[in-house]
Length: 508
Ligand code: SF4
Image: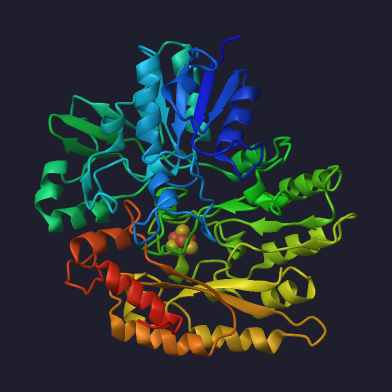
């Protein structure tokens, strides 16, 4: 049998809504395409397993960039990691390796790139592991088209066009290489310009978004980015209600019965890549769709009564959809619906479903978007699994400003949380912090260390990783903030290590 589409992925394949490839496979199958998946190929020979696809190979490293997965923030090869699902079977620069292997085995086949690695390397980007700028991954991999962000609409359109033998230009949410300069686009500084000037690199960074028709010149070619398609609640309802088997690999056990409520994040943290993946607007699923999914889950033979995690990138952004403008400033906007009424109503309804013991919220929450009613529901509704996770990241105002996270007072939230406790159901907070972010000198770290001493459950302190295309990575590379003011940046192995050790009072 020959397949229309063959996905090649760096991750183990699992049929679950947490897997992007699983959603795309289910969607393509719904529209009549046959789909196969090759997981973790180790040689070009592995790519011949299902022969040549009728339409295209879809290539991804999975949900994480392969270099982030394979190396620690101090650039050592990962062996074991508490937070990342390290897997020695994922090749370094997986997307480029797999694309080259496909070309070795098959002539004239269309290669479609997707996933985080492709999305965050679509234009010229700083590569921390090479410590240099790299061109768009479309050029390095010599692929036909790149899908950025969530790719459901794009992948259906690509399959349709290839089936109808039409060309692949102007598909929303994709990037292609062109020989011609198009009209009506926003021109980014060229690869040449940003390679020569750090100021130009910052100009480029400030222009990146998912909703513009962007173009970058690289030598005599142009990389074209067509604006992302609009995804709606209805679209998400369709994707997340596919009848997934929910079998997951060992590392994801305990999350089989997680339910996704929304996509996107309005937080805009500078170190985070979500803005350029899922976008900076919230798209929530309808309450009916979520309840339908949960009503089916309770009938699953392995279901023991617990929803393992109910959420999205930040669990409490559910229902914060707003389409009034595109300023990207929702987090500080007065129009934002902060009542959390929709989420509280949803949680109450889920708890009433027969067969549900607990609906846990294990995704982190944005503490500055909470209120008394919501915290009360978290505690009295039994939604906190062990501890409630929050990510203040830092306590120094300047570092927080560079992180674009200079929001509400952490102490105020901790007091509110304590005030809401009931003695029969006492719960604690746990904290995530980050060190060695641009702007963080020893002075700021000492301030954080002093604050951390007062806290009970510091779950993690991560050394900042300059992942491709984020605002913080731009600061790291240029040594300047986004307004081109010089800032302090810790660069050396020793300094980063020292910053982390101080936080845990380890000897230097
Ligand atoms: S009006 Fe405010 S909440 Fe709505 S989209 Fe604009 S910035 Fe966001």
